[in-house]
Length: 233
Image (tube, rainbow, N blue to C red):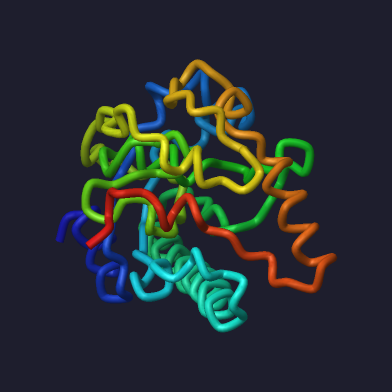
């Protein structure tokens, strides 16, 4: 069995719905702005995605209701845990095959100043041809919109890219920009040569969650995921 087919089999047997491979070389300059020298060791990225349940995402405009918030937070946490476990299964397989691997946690911050992880899961999925990065700075796939949690395994395994980045299909839509309770999005479309901060102020989201906790509410939002027309049924 070919290497990619085995990886896909491991992932899909554990419920992963999106599997792809990205060649990181075309985005070298963009990546090295915040992950210096990583590409020298890991020129490829395996991207894995699990869709969130519609009946968890659809009620998010009522997130002040505790049941809605609890269901969403639980889905977020348990899906991240599943992805972490699956990424290690794939990493262990590739290491046994003699390749270098570095699984990037599904939701762990490494840069407190930028509020960012070691590597962008959304960028990996974008480069693998699974979707585009929308005005919400989320990965938007034609099938599921932004309703997907992602994880990445960096590797030097000789895998072929599964696709090329999809063109932005947000058009004139600004629903995610308009619904954001703290105006965190500028409405600018994604451009690889522009910093994330030109499109998204992560500190506004951070403060919003902190204020929710201080007021006794659960730190849940997800409105930009809820409102996106892509992925809605």
